[in-house]
Image (tube, rainbow, N blue to C red; front, side, top):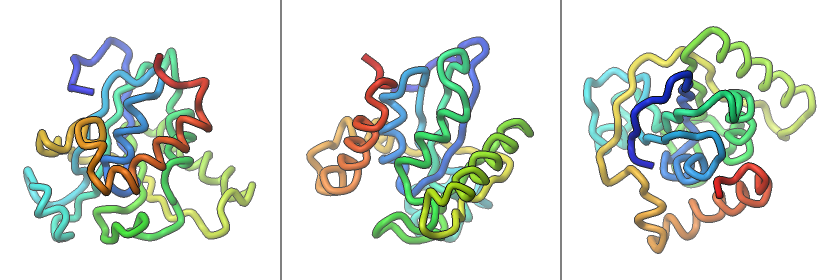
Length: 185
């Protein structure tokens, strides 16, 4: 989705779960989501480029900034989708994508978001939802830089590209199956 003017009462969730193309493709289709922007969060370099972030020297995570309507979908529901579409137990890795920029992270915009995230992780851990410990970092959102234009709507615009076919498409299909009742029409 292209950047839209924030609606009154909208909230923001900033999430890192590997390549931002995968997350954006899923959240774009979720009811209650107003906009999704791919970008870079919580690093040291001002206005980093994709190449700089991919080199792993900037400290940024590849993230999506999801603007959502809390009257339609809660932050917890956003996180439930998030934990379904990525692997939160592999440190600095999602599949073949390795490096700190691919870390699993929830970058909180309020103390309430931090509490919700920590409670959900505790529940997933207690329920043994994963065979290994969850390594998702839960920290305050500090900086966010919008990624270059060609990263926005990447899956929608490049669906035939091999990475999209073999990595992004299966995650989108899994999401569509599990959350069919939450899809935008």
